[in-house]
Length: 227
Image 1 (cartoon, one colour):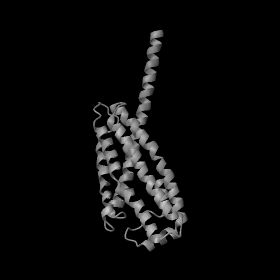
Image 2 (cartoon, one colour):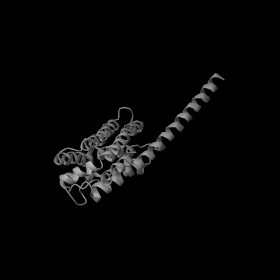
Image 3 (cartoon, rainbow, N blue to C red):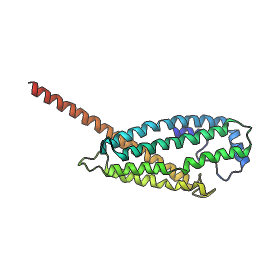
Image 4 (cartoon, rainbow, N blue to C red):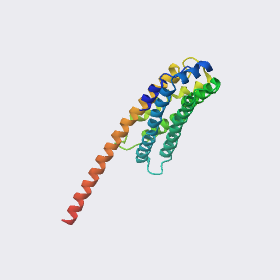
């Protein structure tokens, strides 16, 4: 849903950071309805992240218990990640809201959206590393998540960490529309989301089976006692 909204807005790939103020203002003026509609869809999609983060937190607490510091750290980092999606979306909406703004203001708003959107990668990196560490710390004979999932989480999030360098470049692979900061970050981020979602669904299905087995065993035991 988020990607669809971004595509409708024309933000895949992003407008080049090297565009002049007039060029940026013209882009927002010419496509203001498309941008506003696409970003509205992306905003609605971002809200779904709250459910995703909550599900991760519940499953992580199954590994280390209700008082797990790492599980809480994951949820806090995930909450920050949601804000790092919503804030830039609101800023871009503001840039597209009026067509008569000074081009320099529109350019500033555009910068204010893209720089934190890709530049604040630390919370997502922290979230992924914490999840990976939690998975690897599960020492049960039959762990909740596959062990490779821990390495997958850590490796993937480190792949989009270089996006933090967008604050230093106007062009090249580390600019906000570059090969590393945009395309590599985009692919690895959604690979992370898809891979982790698959692992979560697997863990939830296992939880349901375990609860059913426990219920059946309790019923059989109770029947044996009463019989």
